[in-house]
Image: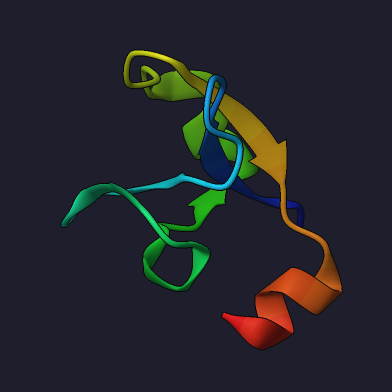
Length: 58
């Protein structure tokens, strides 16, 4: 199953955390494909697929 994070458009090194807001990838919330279809993005956010290497390093 494909997983996603939310990345900040003007600062692509920031990722969304439901707990902390914008921050480092290690704190990013991981979302399912279904969640990307039903949830609203935060301002300046866009969906980004998580690749296996990123997931292993989280």
